[in-house]
Amino acid sequence: MAAEKASRLLALSGLFPVYKPPGVTSAQALNELKGRLLTEAGLKEFTKRKKQTLKIGHGGTLDSSASGLLVVGIGDGTKMLGAMLSGSKKYTTTAQLGKATDTLDESGTVTEEKPYDHITREDLEKVLEKFSGNILQVPPLFSALKKNGKRLSCLVREGAQVEAKPARPVVVYKLALTDFQPPLFTLEVECGGGFYVRSLIRDIGEALSSCASVTGLIRTKQGPFTLDDETLRKEHWDIEHVAQALQTYNPPEDQASKRLKTGGDGGLQS
Image (cartoon, rainbow, N blue to C red; front, side, top):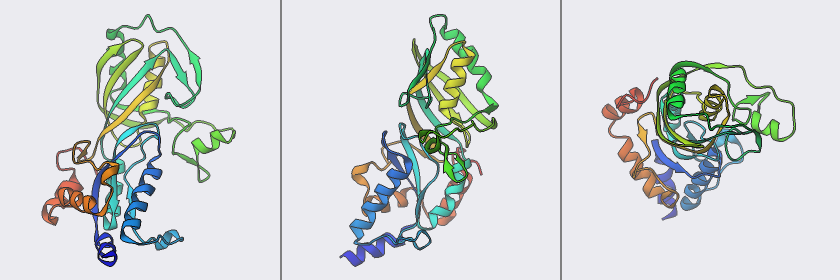
């Protein structure tokens, strides 16, 4: 039985969506998924990275405090993850006016508080127009970006002096205000690769002559994948459910290649 499961696991290949809960990093979620699959199959991981027992990876880091869609590649599917990094993504985010933190979200330490009573819904909607299309954005210091091979977030937490990365071009396809109840507001964001919602909220706060930080963030779409009932939750992180997900999202080659390589519904850009 164990041999059959091991054989089935190692034969799995393709892309599938999982739900990452808040409070864990994308790497931690992926490692837990991988560990469960290997344990179920009675396999152990090699200690050397180049000799992985099971090839598995994800298509783009999601903030540890955020939740939502994480696209996973298994087997030869790991070769397709690059398209996920450059493809479009959708987020729902809730933010708080009048409060800034060092991490740009509620997980951090408050660094500044400013009045926000002067801000109206119309003010916010007008400001959003400045952040649509091709814009320049400075990434957060607390991020997965690296300096000398080490994540900026780790360097900052260690007390090192770290300068922010220079502003870089990013694209916002859609930006809509869906709720405004000061100090809280909610946005729907569709953006390209390399975009940080936390930086967007910081910049919106500054543009409103105040400050702002993220209180909630959910990724709802990445490329052709959406956060729905088919997205694998923790209780379904097993060989059988992964195999079923691969069948759902990786149909025969003539269809799968078109959907996953071109984006299918237009969401994925290569």
